[in-house]
Image (tube, rainbow, N blue to C red):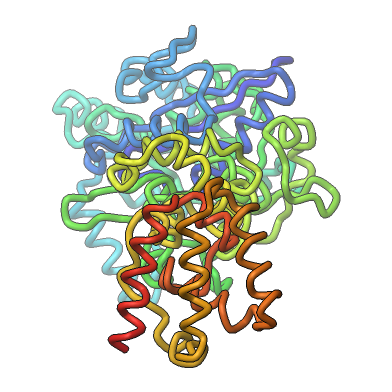
Length: 506
């Protein structure tokens, strides 16, 4: 197992959580750093929870982030099939091998019987019933029943599941790259079901069989799976297989730090926790892509939620991330999801992105119709003016709407404060300068209008705020003269007329 082979193994039970994207990213970064292989495996053994469209969503999300698998469903590879539901026939012989070696057993307990014993245990004050070495002999299984009874029930196909037989009085230890030496006492573990009555394996069995057959070298996954790893280590031992190296990632915490980030936190705080928009049929959940985030910015942000390159460096290219990444630098403690930090990263990426690439995003975004009537030349100039003033891509229109439409509202408070009727003669003179300026460039307009103001010993503060509000409706925005050049003489004069009409009305 000299080559690095890692896998991202989501279940298609709904949209891919942003925490899952981080897991995929860390697997991807390790694979790229070591010239290894990044595999996508769809763990769909729980068909009751399967959600149509979820697998396509997972693939689309990975593609959007630029972390495409080297192997997987739809990507090819020599270790397929890569959907566990298509590997059903593979698992039976490994289950049988563990039964034959005394490491697993048949269980015939019905759901009603299990519910009854749980209720009985609750009445005794035991609220965490475990099907384990203490109750194994009291249940209906091949350990407690005679061979004849077992064979009879097997022949009747009587609700047959297979459970792992956990040994007693053993300490199960393994080294986790993130957490160091980890140990579990076998007496605290339950006899997990590894094969369901429908013949489908549970996650625990399918996981270790597939990791072995796909020659996975490192299992990088969320810390919620740490408690199950003892069972997995035992199964590797029972089948005489070498276990991969484990690295359990810290949780991504909600913004207050009080627990794991979930979709309800997104709804509460008004930010996305999914990479792409997801329509459940009952509710539409926000997506980073549709909210106007740059995929590279989100990747950069996510990379630092649990990993530190060893210095204070925050902005990193994909190549830098790959070169700097190491599992040993992943931290143990949970990382707070700071949405303001995510927006900061996005802002920095937009500022650093060439205008032509931003234009491509806007032309192909969900609000592309807002820009459809404007030329590429106009768009590129407006992007240049606005790129340091936006946080997400929709801001180009929402914060710069006055570049594409006449002002709908005016900052009347500032107009009332700044406009003086005695200065109207100067505004009329500036209007004449605008009409007669042949070049109509920012440089030419700036020189003439500033020259007029200086020559007539007027303060800039008496003129510029009014001009800005008349043309854009707001005091915010790019350089006044660059905006005028972009809009062009005709549009500036139309806005001038409408703006001063508003002043007269007000």
